[in-house]
Image (cartoon, rainbow over all chains, first blue to last red; front, side, top):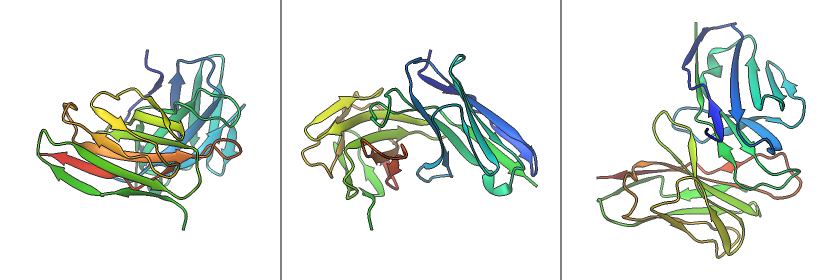
Length: 113
Length: 114
């Protein structure tokens, strides 16, 4: 089993739709989790951190399910500008120590008019 | 301005030649990372370093080498032993201790082996 797995998609949704992605991880000791956004041929940018039970930032909501070992990203009221690749990252260390940060393979989202 | 600088942005090399990609940061970050990205793929970890003079292999270290002689510098050498080196290479850093957990990335280096 891969350390971090994502559904690669692609997800094609109309503007205004709600879309959700999942990311599963194999190391049950993993402590912190992140969602990054990557635009075509650019470096990834942090979208959200997911530390405990989840968090919300505007149209974006990230959730953590420790029992089933997955995190999710929900995007409401999708905009054309949300089209990108969404990457999850898992940190196996606790607190603010960072070791081997593993990325999932990314989920491609295309929002169309 | 603080940040991470990767160079060169684009690099063409002949098969069998070693190539060194530069990564410099002035953020005073402790940990630094090298990732490789192939078209339509996620980021795969090559090497990482949490402290000067120490580094660990990632998931795809074969055919690559690194050094961490200074806190601000983490160069990556793509050796001739790497069978398929054409890819997008990303360097990143993160501070140990207090922080948001945000990886700071350079703009990447695109290596094409002819």
